[in-house]
Image (cartoon, rainbow, N blue to C red):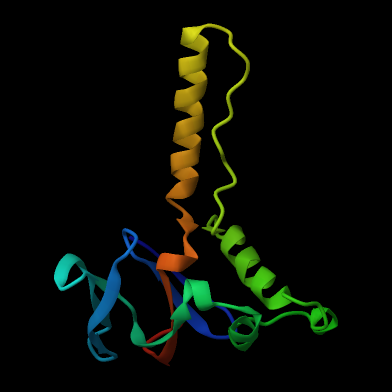
Length: 158
């Protein structure tokens, strides 16, 4: 499970489910408790349960796959000269993730394999490429299993 807190025009918490086809159920979301208790369900069975320190009460803004420019402009501040460009708010959101070392829906590191130089060299290239890919994948949010929350009360801002 990945999570990232962003302090933009609105304070956001982004959480990715640990696997596909899991539904998230919020068990507890009290501001005075400062934790979000969630369960990830597959059908009626609990697949994964965790508690996340939140420092405030949350409201589900949308799923990552529903996060479009119209929603992004409510939570992102941008330079007024760029407001006319289609999709600018969503690109600004993705840039905020990139600044923090995260990716949105695309791992930029695909393992690359050169021409045949022998089995030892090929194996070395495969292992190095796979390690780089896996490191980037651990910081890549997949919109179809990502939940974006907005803080509606703050215990403290970061």
